[in-house]
Amino acid sequence: MKQNDVFTKRETLRPINTLTCFDSAHTNSLYILKMKELTGIYKQESELLEEDLTHMNQLINSQSEEIQNEIEPQILQLKHLLQKQVVEYNLEMQDEIAQLENIRNDNLDLEKEIYKLQQSLTQLDDHIGQQVLQRKYDIKFS
Image (cartoon, rainbow, N blue to C red; front, side):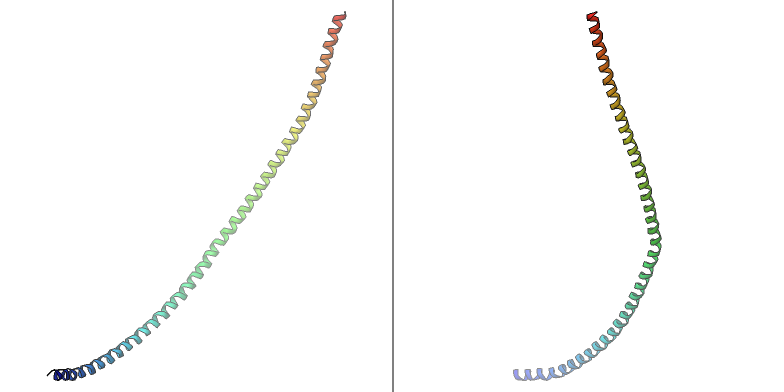
């Protein structure tokens, strides 16, 4: 009886296996069709994305040019302003240097005058000292 059961099971399984194979083939066909459909959709989406990317790149390039055209005059203006300020600063520094040189020359002249005055004072002091000594001498011997 056990052999009969096994045989019966085999006989029952065969149609199921055939049906399963048919279902698998049908499922595979549906899967292939679905994959072809998805591949087509993917290809369309890729083309659309590529067009969008190209458009975005063109937009970015044009905006970049616009920004550069806006900024370039400002940069040039700032450059000219800085150059002008540097020239003005250099002129101011040259004026200050000239003033400092004048002050230094004046100081040298004053130092020369002070030296001359000190020499004159020393000579006067020596002369006064000699006169005082002369008077003391004159008083002593008079």
